[in-house]
Amino acid sequence: MEDLTGNRLLDGLPPAVLAALKPSLEAVDLPSESMLECRGQRTTHVYFPAAGIASVVVSGDGLPKAEAGMAGREGMTGTSLILEDGLSLHDVVVQISGHGWRIDVDAFRTAMKIPAFRRRQLRFLQAQMAQTYSTTLAFSHAKLEIRLARWILMCRDRLSGQAFHVTHGAIALMLGVRRAGVTVALHELESRGFIRSTRCLLEVRDRVGLEASTEGYYGASEAEYDRLLGADTRAW
Image (cartoon, rainbow, N blue to C red):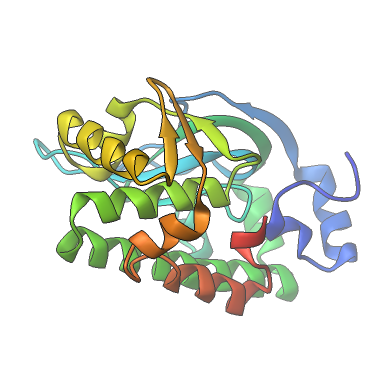
């Protein structure tokens, strides 16, 4: 394992703290659709992605699903453990395949006794709360085209390169809408030159224009992450 992990939450730790964690970190692949947490079950591992995206998916008995948040190389899963619980309130599923690191529950709880580690986890939890608040605001008031533009930007922030693979069906599930609506919204963004969309590939072609098209619904939680954790997610 190299000095840096590729996960910015881990790599922002003091070197001595990261070195102390290394024996407990296990390198893992994160295939698409892998379940990292299940609603109502105990969390067994915390994952720190170095590539790919994990989605926090909320649902209820007999209710549809929607994405409440996402974590990639800026973050982690298993946030309930930060609050000394461990029972997951949601599913966490790998939306875009990648790789990263995981640590088991006991080792994570031991690490939480290290002040610098605990402080960074708490700050990430606040940043994740800010993301959820922004998602709720967008779900409540923004039209689909705006929500889609925001979602594409959030994915792009967490991935290398301008393009990434995702299906229209997966986007529809994450945004809690019909697939046909996603297709129409993608075509609109593409017609304005912001993206290029094929069956399974999205490419950002005009980031400035795409950000402007979100009408302020993108950027607030990203700025909060920057403030709390000292890294500009939009410059990755």
